[in-house]
Image (cartoon, rainbow, N blue to C red; front, top):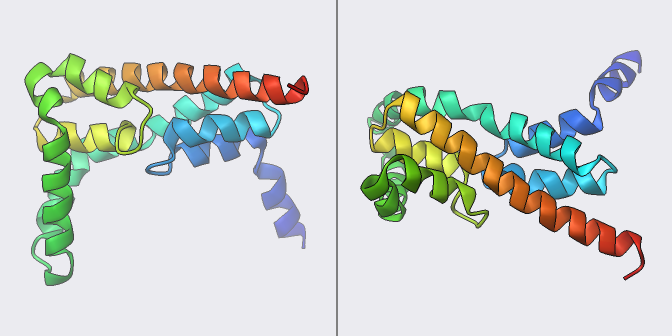
Length: 163
């Protein structure tokens, strides 16, 4: 019972937001509204979501290609890896064409199928250098986070005021 209490004490609102933001497809788009709904200030929710969502980026940029190469040797994963690779590359024409700016915009648009995970995967598959990809992903993520904070704070403010 003490172990459970210890774990529950570690799970703060902030860590919940950061861990939520690290989940693919959720990222800042889902973590900021969660943080605001949990009672965090919009800036606190934004900061924790940005921190959490950036955790996977270096791992994806450096490790996804070797992992994909390993998984392509398995009949169980070969089809999935081919579909994921082709789907990502099909969506990343602007990233390929415009490089840093294309990647920044791709990550900044808070829509399904865009974001940190997809942008990092596209950058890795397009063999973008880390010193180009990481700042573009970070700045795009900040823009997406600011958009979601404005939307979340506006919705939470409207609900809180009884509108």
